[in-house]
Image (cartoon, rainbow, N blue to C red; front, side, top):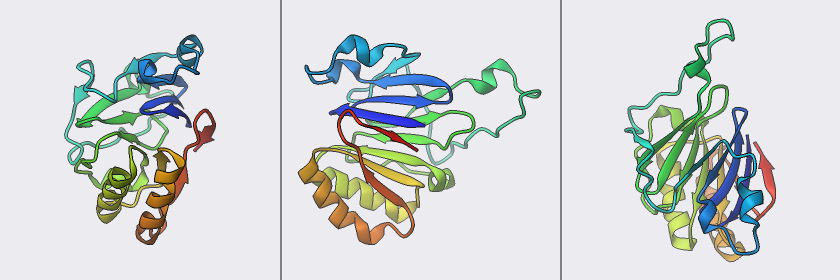
Length: 180
């Protein structure tokens, strides 16, 4: 899995052999929109509700079991992009940890699967801290990535550090890829 954040809620994701782009129209003017979506298999909305995304209850959702190549049907390899709350998306790709993108100050209800998830938090200082704290109170994700400006990230890191208990915490830099 590779995450490249540009600004706001614009992120390019390489996952499960596909390229996904969230909110390409929200990218800063300095980003060439053709390059951003070049090679993208799918685009979806995060900043506003995307009616094309199926809605699921994150407390009831379960990751799909990984099947052998001989047992897989073509739909088993399909990447699913699901809405799990307001401005919150879950990406389910076979063989990858669940990826959760949260651009809301309201953390969704998570199930046990969240302990293995990679979570990207978008937003400003108070929202990052509040959402991150709620998340860490109920789950221990594999990694939390903060997508915000440097000052907001500094505050969030200081506040979240004591709650991590083994979870990874990183900051996404605009335009730089993070390999997970």
